[in-house]
Image 1 (cartoon, helix red, strand yellow):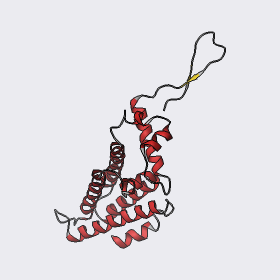
Image 2 (image 1 turned 180 degrees about the vertical axis):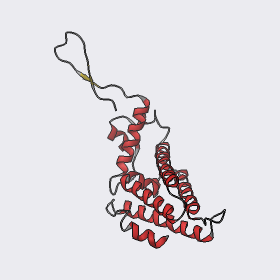
Image 3 (image 1 turned 30 degrees about the vertical axis):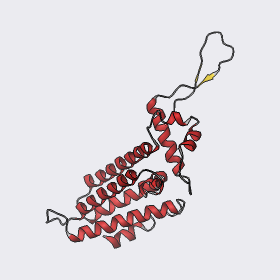
Image 4 (image 1 turned 30 degrees about the horizontal axis):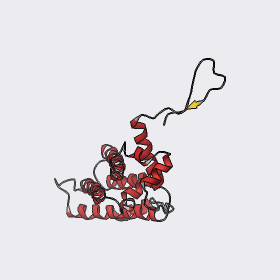
Length: 206
């Protein structure tokens, strides 16, 4: 959102503040930030477009000038989550060699991402998508499949070209742990830290 600007008409004794109309990209970002903020409220029920519009101070019609549907808004949030997560994973794989340390670091960073972004955690766990289009949950499921695939790759035997059975089992356990911690965090009203006793837990898993 742009800051308010003052009229500069010559000779005016009192200048009236006016609001600069936001550019389309700015309004779109504001809508997504507001939606994410509403999802951060502990115990928040389904977010309606009416409530979202009221929070921003615009009409519902104004929302639909930027997004064709509420599902499209959630798709944009999922895009943000996926881009952020894959970026974090790349950071780890670029710095750490394959092995248990790399896999543990990936899980730790993803849990930290969830802890710093409570609203996105509700998207990742599917809690915010219960009453939305099924394709949204399918996209989240696909994201976790990508995470599990990367963990298998991280845990593969250094001598083999493909992940071992042990690597597949451990990757599955790590994803289950990741999802469980995020879900507990969301359903505790964001009180139970997903990184609680994390080092000790990961040491047992890998």
